[in-house]
Image (cartoon, rainbow, N blue to C red; front, side):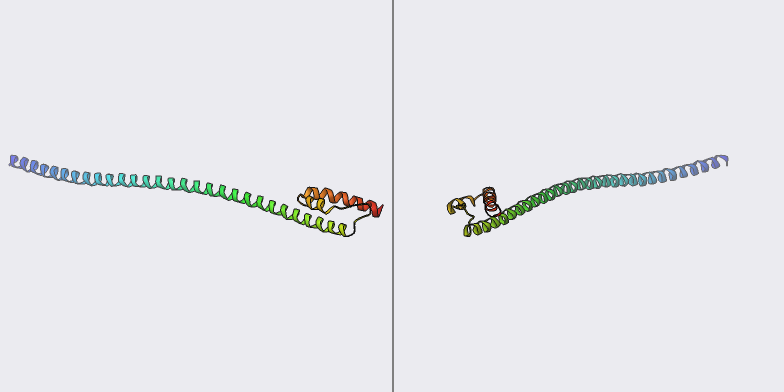
Length: 146
């Protein structure tokens, strides 16, 4: 009876041992699969993060390039505006001097001879016109205002 009892205990022990090994292998494979899925998900997230960083760097370079282009365009527009304003002012100055010259040609001051050819050749350069007109004005003022 004692032998029979020992055999039953051994059988019971073996039964529970087999069950334990079965559950251990089941849970081990389950956790191993979970670990593999977890590592795959981490790798996927790392790759996505790297791709986002590359996109961010690319966008930053694009922003920098567009900022530089905008600054250069703005500087060009400002230069063009300054040149255009300068040209318009010179044109107004030339027009004003031409009108003043016409008035002086109609009524030249005493002792001042105005050569039309000489005047027309001077009209090509505003600095010559300016100096010429200053001389004419000074002579005119000397003549009439004494």
